[in-house]
Image 1 (tube, one colour):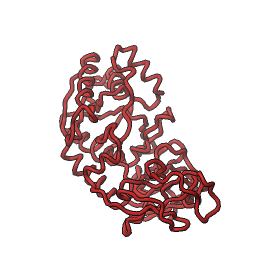
Image 2: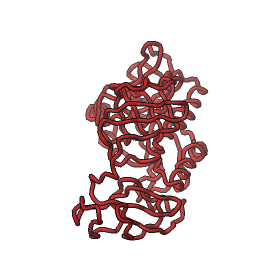
Image 3: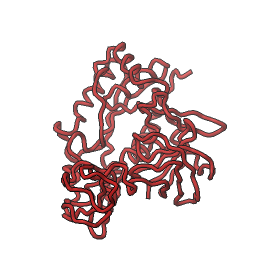
Image 4: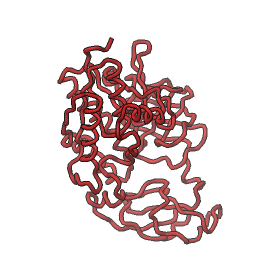
Length: 366
């Protein structure tokens, strides 16, 4: 039933997108691969793997018998994603550029390009699912819960989902690698890429220093306002951060609930005074929150979920789903209350709401 229909698959040079293309070809689609060039500022082999990724894409395309187009979206990426990323860090928040990259580049600029060249659908190697249910499109969690990427896709809308295929929705990563090996794809065991795409494997602070100049300030204890050390800029730190504070060995303060040798964690950032406040101990009350306010809302269905129903939500990608209620929703913000306190809820990160396996959408933690 797919014979003659064109699907454009975003190929990254990894095993997931390669197997996605392979599966669609086997299903009878006319598959066209598209390699997106999204970053140009320092495209060197030291940190950016795009050259090798393109070589891998061309090798896979040749093996499975599809054409590949290379498209440069670097200007759109800088304007729609990277500018926002820098502005958020400068304001003291911790953004998630991968969320914005999906909604603005991979399922917007990429989708527009694919439709222009005659595609009926686009597809990616994301671990997520999409289905039509009662006249609307739903975004679903992947079968492989350890790889599920619906968190990063929660800003997709009805128009985007209607044109999208996720061939890996029902597969586990180990199965994907086996399929790649069986098809003779040389990257069957290629290591997964990690971290933010334009930073690569370099230290995060090293990258930010190129765009946000250092601004030294004080590190103080939140409990007793003691001066504990110095930082290079609050923008380089995030709530819940433990490493890189260089204040190890300082004894606990007046709170009395932390051991002398407990680790220190960032609990608050004061942009106005350029002070970084820290607390001692992973379980310190200042690191826990049972409510949050979210703005810049985006609901998959185009309308918010019912209030005062029990849902689950994540406040960061690797967290387990936590029971919650969504309250006081309007066009601009909502309040989310959790059954149990959540650790290191971080302004700028995304909170994503689920009803069982269905991703309802979410917003940016304010």
